Image 1 (tube, rainbow, N blue to C red):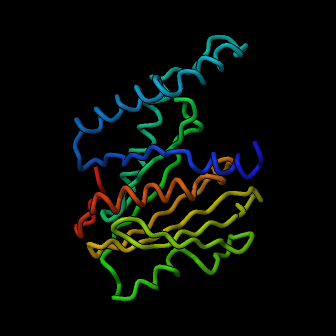
Image 2 (cartoon, one colour):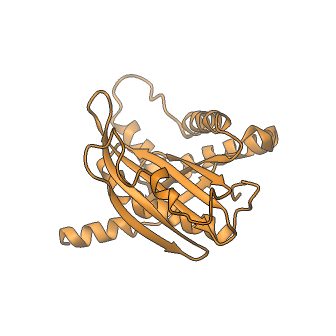
Length: 219
């Protein structure tokens, strides 16, 4: 397979996206979702855990779907609780041969009433002209999905320690009149190659759901 074909196959991978329940949803919902995350890691990461267990030589293998799923759920819910009322935390991953390709990628989705009739201000919101931490000029993609039009920005940034990461900021105006801003950062090269396509899939999901002016994210 050629390099172009490899890239095309990679960016065509369907993403799986979920919104993380907040404390407002109640303890029962959060416990149910924790169980879902444990099942998720047991079903779709089982092959990875089995391979890691087979190569482990430092005593008893310490990782299970139970502890990884529970710890991941607790971490994500704690982050979700830190967000303002108009924002929700989502996570996404992609699959290959029914196995997850990487750990959940967190993303913050903000739901706003428009600041004006002209959605052009969203270009500045997503840093279309670049941010101080960007190591190179951002790449701009216009996005049109059923129920919304918007943009997504990808740029390579540098941490204060010099490590590279991918900055993906996107925004769209829903036909319902809500402006949605999405932000995530990825640190692995394979994630950088697909995160734009992955976030566009989430934009499609949100637009199809028709999130209301109340700022509630789709369930």
